[in-house]
Image 1 (cartoon, rainbow, N blue to C red):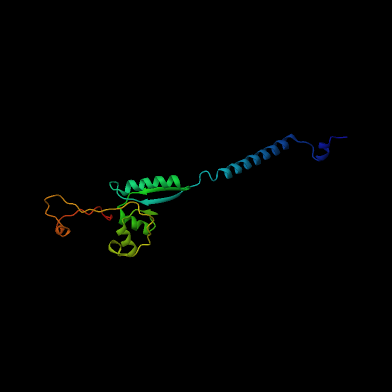
Image 2 (image 1 turned 135 degrees about the vertical axis):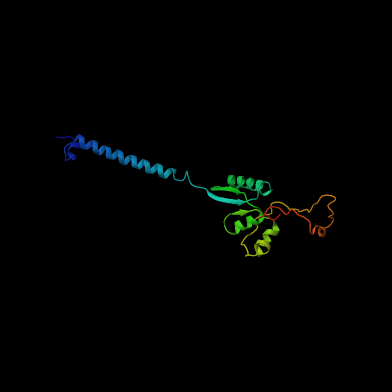
Length: 170
């Protein structure tokens, strides 16, 4: 009486067909392994969402502040990469945020009020901006050199005045 394995097989054993079947099984196994690996690592290279902060010129206060915030937020917000962008300052930042070209922007309170109300440098229309936080008190001083003949704000009429970079609120 033949062995049970031989009874179950109606086709006589063919080494050539066995090799092909073995290769197919190997190919299927490799394909299955590739699928498992692809699924398991699909989340490993997940792209981070980008956020941009409109800061200011490289010589101003907003630029290093923006860089610090970008580093802090990138480290603390899972799934986000935050960058600080060089800009002209408050007015530029408000326009960038208002047009969705930047996600966050540093701005002086008076410039933000003007943007929200569509006044002064924002007379073209109100911008849908909102204040997130007050970062530091911004005291402004009008200064001059001794002997310039300027003792009051009225005395600056007709004098040359430095008002800051274009696009800033300085």
